[in-house]
Amino acid sequence: MDIKPHTLPWQDAYKLMVGSILPRPIAFVSTLDEEGRANLAPFSFFTAISAEPMLVCFSPMRKGKDGSKKDTLSNIEETNEFVINIVSEEFAEEMNNCAIEFDRGIDEFEETGLTKKESISVKPPAVAESKVQLECTLHQVLHFGDQPGAGSLVIGKVGCVRIDDELYYDGKIDTKKLKPVGRLAGQSYTKPLADAFEMIRKR
Image (cartoon, rainbow, N blue to C red; front, side):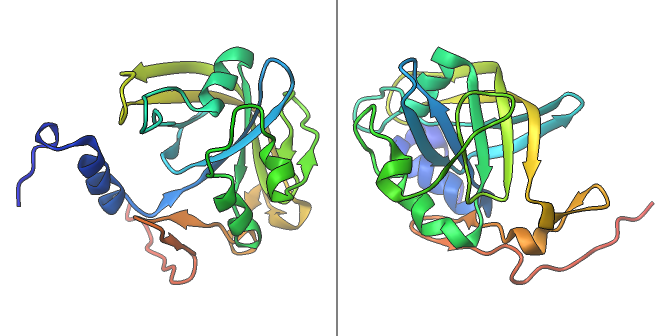
């Protein structure tokens, strides 16, 4: 089967991406708008870029109805700051509830019962239930259209990595204790460590 994405409605092209690029880690992004109102939303187009400087990125797509920007993107462009909260099994349901399209200005922390935690290097609060948080300042944002199905690439420079003490050892993170959650296609998620295996890289 050979498919040319430009011949498809964007919704069908999207299904091919999320059905093949997986499992995907989840960037649970907390921001503030110019009035200081908090926003919290999950994004599964998320990865690392480099360690020096430490750069990470995620891609918020435009809203499917009208191509408008999501609140997370608007807030980051207004304030240049955000926090990526790594998602663990313990609060996966609350994370999923933050994907509801609330009206602008509604605080997802309050709607879902998640707890705000004061950040060290940026103003947006972190999610206290998250065991690892990446406090970021905006390094660059790139836009790829403004129509439904389009998206942006938000690149953040990590100014502080906050890790629960029980996870940190010998300069590393105990991923078994982190219990991360990944995104699959449709309504499916995964516990990526449930069937993990090791392969030694040859030199």
